Length: 146
Image (cartoon, one colour):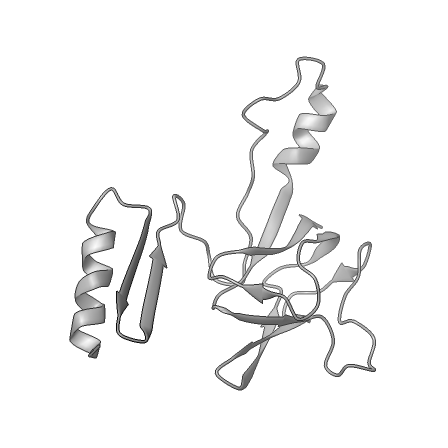
C-alpha cells in the first residue's frame, strides 16, 4: 500500500463519522481510530467529573477531579518506565515532576523517544505497565498540576 493511499484513508476517517476503521491488503493490516477529543501531545487534557457521578459527591471531590490531568502518548509504541531494565523508574506515584522532566520512554521503530512533562505536576497514577504497547493519545499518567 503506497503513501498516497494511506493519506487518502486518513482523510476519509477524518471527514466521516467513523471512529474506527480497519483495512487488510495482503499481509498488511492497517487500523485507524479517531479520538473524540484530540489530545495535546505529551501534555495534559483536563477531565471533568464522570458522567454517572454519584449523587453524594462533595464539592471538594468534584474540584479535585477537575484538577486531574493526563500525560498522553504522542505516538504508538512500547512504554518503558525506566532507562534500562535494572534502573529505577523515571517517576512513581507521589513524585513531583518539573516542566521538561522525562517521565518515560516510548520505543517506536527501534527509536527511543523520551516523553517529558510540559508542566510542574504530581504523579497521581501510572496507567500503563512496563513494556506495554500504547496507542496514540492513550493516557500514560494521571497527574495533578502544582
